[in-house]
Image (cartoon, rainbow over all chains, first blue to last red; front, side, top):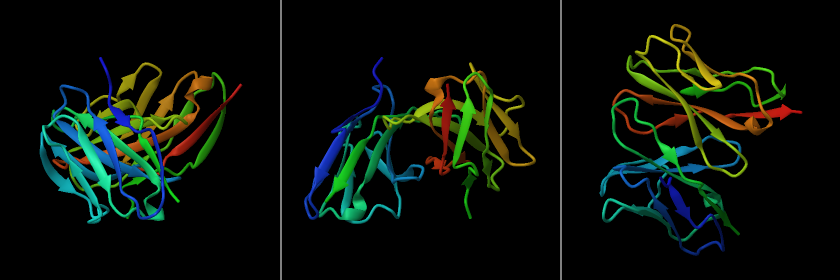
Length: 115
Length: 114
């Protein structure tokens, strides 16, 4: 029984470059979430999918950010024209909708450093 | 206003002692769920325990229990017989009503001393 996986685990990039992260959820989970966590803070919600449909996006998700889940399985999060303020841990979580008790299971995260 | 408040930025506890990590929350929705997650230095968020607003009993999972005081809007995590491996960041989180996202507190860093 594999958990949520994310790739890459670490990414260093120069300001202005584009980066793409991948998340593979637990196979039977229909919901997939992206969060961002900066130093000293808890994770902050960015967006989520139910199957392939993107149902909600946070105001934190500027137009430089785009997320996809084309076949309702893995998801990608792309950041265009990266800025130093994008440096953070990007966490992916998946769940199976079961009402209020729905538990989200997280992957190991991708640490992004923008120089 | 903060939805989730964790007032202890850091705690030091002797191994084998019990630990209580504080969490208060703010919501006007009668239906909500409360979660605790552990984040070791590796970064992965590990689910520990869940408490629903309508649950009559406090949740327990092994050495973890949740001291749920609804009237005080408090959901403290209790770790019994602490171990060195319990050293990590601990986050309290909440889902309100039919909303899907989870809101996290700022966390408490727990250090277990040998």
